[in-house]
Length: 511
Image 1 (cartoon, rainbow, N blue to C red):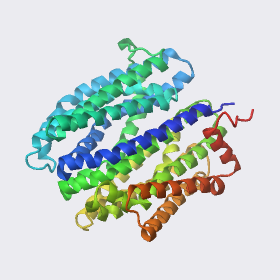
Image 2 (spheres, rainbow, N blue to C red; image 1 turned 90 degrees about the vertical axis):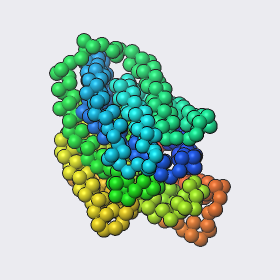
Image 3 (spheres, rainbow, N blue to C red; image 1 turned 180 degrees about the vertical axis):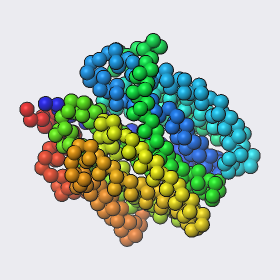
Image 4 (tube, rainbow, N blue to C red; image 1 turned 120 degrees about the vertical axis):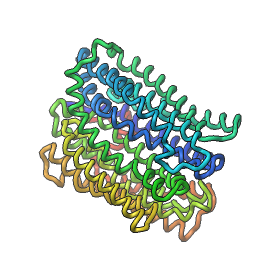
């Protein structure tokens, strides 16, 4: 019988949580630091530039989205020849795609100010920023094939260490350049580029350690393997286009329809939803290798139970920060960015609160990747992403809701997709009743909404005007929530599973 290795799951989960906390602390300090040194309009160019790389990633996704699935299964079968064909097809295929993208991507960097609202006098700085961000994208894509080693070997703890080192490098270089020269946005791009080099070196080192059977070998490139991977990956590309229209179009709409100042404001608030999305990917990602292995071994009964627990645990883990961020949004913005941002607290809640529910389903989306049933999800995601774009433009412009309209459109369409499609389609893949996963989705929404309401009440009746008061209030509410979840929401079996995840040596799985 296949059993999850609880000590490694515990280590992965701990590393993901620590990485999330570290990213939050960096964001806490870095965003206001950049705004103070660059100004809100110039700062808005940074999230705008990084958002544009999401569009570029679409062209390499057909290969990169498939390699994790196929390589995990090949390594599990100990098929070294097939593993090397998959790895090298992904690596060399990515090089060819990047070479083909070079001319149009660098042309756009030189002419970006013709398409976007860029403050007068900052056109050259924005070009420098874009060129550096494109360079970062090229390095990240080239090393993505090596990054798959930590995924296949379920060593997310090591991947998080590399990510933290890369982040430290990025922040250090920004501070150094800002102190040596007059602060400019191109310096931020330079920091991103150097950090990508550090992350790439780390990925290659871990690849050599974790998967010594894999070699870089041009002769291992296989057209048949390429066709197999792209037949899977093209529908993931379609899905990613829809995801971009959900998640990465917001800032473009704000920039074109409202202006560069609003771009800076919206971009500053987006850091929280971006952190939460990244956190959900790494939390749900720790369950993906096991889902792939269980599916490849046809252990569908175990897969159902495992997927349900993954859905519930992922949702509850995500709901805690979502509820706290929304509940304490006003004092958080006051202490973090200053009084000028406090009126944007409702916008921050609109951008964040729905994630308590919507991010929980990320753990069961692995099922249709494992089953190679990605065509329909791709089509649905793309269609609803287009609807989201149209709705965002309509609400921001003709209706007159501005930034709030963009946030409302995203919340509505993402909720519709994750409520009415993903759980039903995931259940269908396993041959279950369409309601199979809904029971596990309810706790995440309930916890995030309850925490937000309690937080609002604390702020309204007590007032929070210092970091100490905010930290103490958050820690108390977080601790009480953990106890309540354990006692009220988790059943006896789930409590045992949770204890095994947290204290694997004290609670050994039954034989």
